[in-house]
Image (cartoon, rainbow, N blue to C red; front, side, top):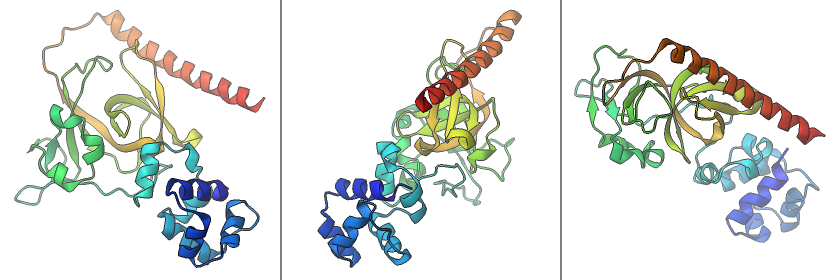
Length: 272
């Protein structure tokens, strides 16, 4: 359990003394001090008050090591937002509808790309995005189109626009399939994903271009995930030779396996 270290961390981030916190909770300073130092454990009523005061749910306050959480996510938590370490949290998606109350497909322009990681949950930010319809998409699902930069995901080219279907439960991620991932640190990225939530609470992100190495992101650093549906390239792509088509996927598999092996070795070294 991480209650003692979490209480210290949250109090110091708020620049409050033990006496201040104790007064807000209606307990003595010595009682609060005993909780921070692990001498005593608070009862359920005090736990509820601690949760309300620090705006962190009881489960996270006790079981999640907040010192290991990214600064961007910890700041969100302190503003009253919950952290999702399993990928199953119910998410409220800001969206727009047409005059008939049907979901639009919002387009994130290149100029709005940098601000999406902070404005994704803001209805005012989403409301001003261009919106359109794609009649061949399922009307009962939610879609959004994102600009893609770089050459890490051929055949999707630099400057392409990729449309994704909103993924509510991240445990439904299918290994080896492309997704649009939105994180606070990197913003919008388009990658092939391997789901490692159950193993270590992370996602392995791979490129279709074998020159780019796979890397892990912690699920608590992820803001949104959209399942790839289709894309529009900015220019015509020249066909590749068949041997290149075969080598690329093989290299990606090798890279993924090497990444997993390296992490297993690090885990073994940490235990020695």
